[in-house]
Image (cartoon, rainbow, N blue to C red; front, side):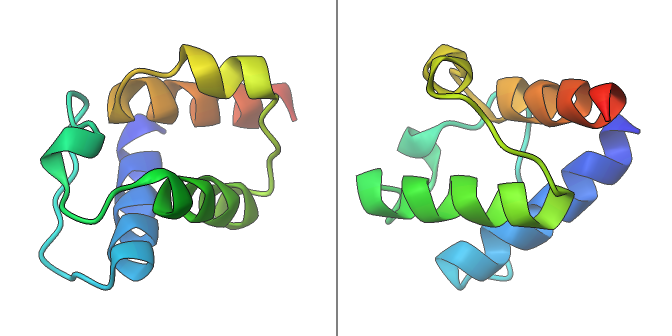
Length: 81
């Protein structure tokens, strides 16, 4: 399930950042992707929520430190459905 989430999330990243060369890893952070600022962060979260049909709480988002945490959060939400 994690690999499928990563593949779908990669597509979300590429769409949000308009860059088809983006490859995400568990350790990827905003510092690793040019143009990842607070506004694109919000767009990224919203786009991921729409893609996976989930909704994060603010405290869940604050706890996420990298893409690996984001993938794990998506995985937990999908398992709870």
